[in-house]
Length: 420
Image (cartoon, rainbow, N blue to C red):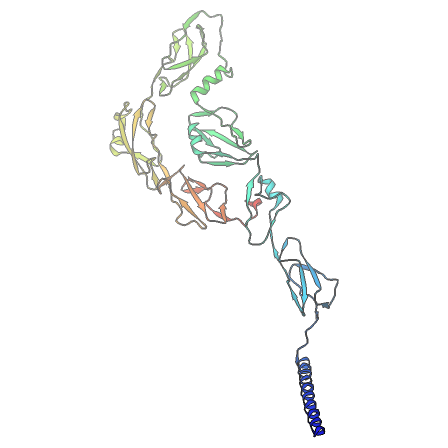
């Protein structure tokens, strides 16, 4: 009986051991199957990819282990997007950069235009593609801005005979002339120095003659100093004469000028001492408002028909005039009235060519500050869209002979500043 029990115990123990061994063999089998069916992970990479506008610093190797890296370097005038290092990971190259073209500010052009990059040192002149590049004027080199009002106040004209705003670069010169009836006080050519432009003056022609005598450019004539004194110094009301002596001899000459609003009765500014006295008599009379000749316009029919008896007009009288087709008076209408004053006709009867503003300005817009009717000498301003700037520096154009000068044009900021 004891023997039978022992046999049963041995059989149970053997079965338990066999089951455990069977389980271990199944696990080992499963591991072997997984190992045989799992794909192999590559451990090397082929040649690194070539990218445009760059060179590869790899010594010509054709195979790289996982974890190894290569270095790229962009060509001149190109900038890298990303890091210069690419790494081999499980058979693939990761972190390959790009080299994009950059914009370079031409240093010679910037020097020529007295500008520099805003916020950057002179040696840093590159920006990544699609970035903005800002410029600013170099310190100490401001331009000179000449306005139409400054020219009007001094009776000045530009060398082309026009009056309009002008932008003068530092160190550059500009030449002036005077309006009709005035002469310039030298010199006529002025230079822009650090933003300052000294303007010449214009004197009336009669005043200029007097100044010339005073400076002895026209010396008084004394042709016969031994002649007896027969001409006392004249008394010229509303005027003056030169030279100023107590008395004059025969053949002595004086030069007479009148105050504004007056004119010499003889229309001659030179008088000579004769045995009969001064000839012609140096007398200043109030200017008369004579029949005005209006270019590109005319007076009303009645004034023209009776011009022989209705002129000159007296101070305070008014007349009307009209302008031809395509021309306007100073009041921006086809007709206007003028008044006779102590200084002549006011306003001066003139007809101006009309300018039509552009209906569409590419990459910009025109600003109408004082209506949309423009005549010769008027100015118009305009603004350029973001990324564009005025081709001729100032956003101002002047009406000249039925056209605008300079041409209103907005150009892209991508243009080299040296050509601006």
